[in-house]
Structures are given as structure tokens and as C-alpha cells.
Length: 205
Image (cartoon, rainbow, N blue to C red; front, side, top):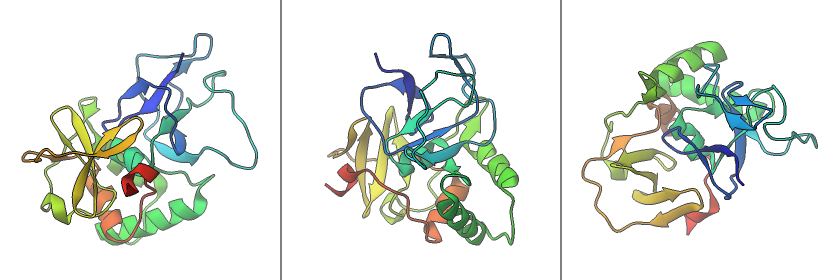
């Protein structure tokens, strides 16, 4: 049976057999004896995105009292949920993200801790996912931005919205007339400044 460790664009954790491109964590939020989640959904404001393979290391998932292994369809999904690249296993990506985050948000230098505090305020509203008004028309959002309408999440790419699912993205004929921004505004500005999120292969189809 799949573990409840797959992250949706709204930041919820679900159980699904589908695999993603990235792992990551929010601290320790599981019981290793039962491999089930605790009631809390984060224990640290540092929500990071990691590589699934790094230096040949292999971690038994949820098997010890260490950080809880979470998984994401792709980087756009992880960004939408409120995560950012890890400075350990993805140092080059994390350094580039921070540089473009600074450029996009008009700050000279920022620590990872301060960036995490900003992201934490943007991703949550009283413990639930915080949605934001679109800063521009949907068709003008950069590739990799994600929006929400009703119960569905959508990836924006080439000015069009693709429906998210645990298995990937698919075209959707509906018109999004009331979409809200899932991607934290500060992360969106980093993407506008030039950071290109890694997208699942289905985003190209």
C-alpha cells in the first residue's frame, strides 16, 4: 500500500502509487513504527525540494526518526505547495533560485532562513493553503506557475492551463474564469526573473 507522502500543489499529502521527479521534506512529521503521518504537516519552516538520487545514498522511506521523505510530481508542483530547492543536494539550483528570488523581489541579499520565513507566510493561512490573486492575466503567467480553481489545480505553460493529477498533466477544455494563484508570489517573481522550474514530461505533451 502506498504511503501518504505525495505532495499535491495545494500542499496536501496523499497516498498514490504514482512516482514523482523530486523528493523533499518539512522536517519530521511521521511515526517510523507505523510509517504513518502525525497530525502536524510540518515541523520546520524550511520546506525543501531534494533530488531522488544523490551520491548513491538510499534512504528507507519513513523508517526512522529523521526527516519525513515527501515526493513531488515535479518542481512546479513543489513550488506551488511552498517548497524551495535544497542547498545541500541541489546547491547550484538553490543558489540560482536565491539569486533570481533576490532579483525578482528587489532585495540585495537574503539568507535561506529569511527566505523560508517569507515563503511560510505566503504558503499558509491559519494552517491551510493560502491562495493569492493573480498578478496578471493567466495567459501571461510564466511557464511553471500553478493556479487553483475549485478543487482542481492547473499548471500554466505556453499561456495555457493543464490539469494536474498525481500521474501528470492533461489538457482541459474548461475555461478558468476564477483562478487563484497557488505558487507563492515571491517564488513566482523568481520564475519571472528567469528561474525555470523542472516540469513533468506530460507538461510537454
